[in-house]
Length: 115
Image 1 (cartoon, rainbow, N blue to C red):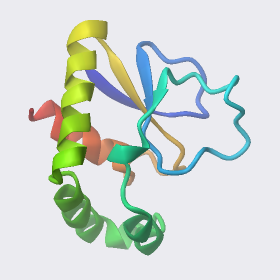
Image 2 (cartoon, helix red, strand yellow):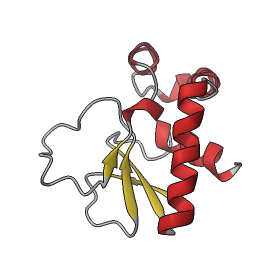
Image 3 (tube, rainbow, N blue to C red):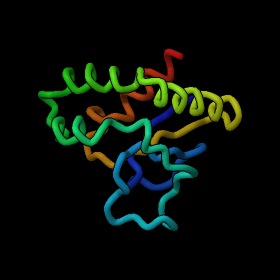
C-alpha cells in the first residue's frame, strides 16, 4: 500500500520515502523519519518554482509533472518504489508542503497506484 504524509506530522506506519527535491526546513537527518530520500522523483526545480504551491496552477502542474515522471530515469525510480511496496508492505511518501491535497506526493501516489 502507498500512502502520503506530511513529514512534520510525526510517526508514520511504514517505510518512509522523502519525495521532496529540497531537504526540509528545520529537520535534521537524525529527526527525519524517512528511510530514504528519493529526490529524483520530485518535480524539477523549474516546475517546483513555477508552481509555488498555488492551487490555481494545480491542473497545469499535474500535467507537467506527469510528463516529467515519464522520463526513463524517473520511471526506474517509480519501479523501485513499487518493489519496496512489495517488500515492505506499506510505503509512505513524505512531503514538506503545507497543502495536503496540492503536492507532488499526491500525484506520485496516483501514478504508483495505477502501476
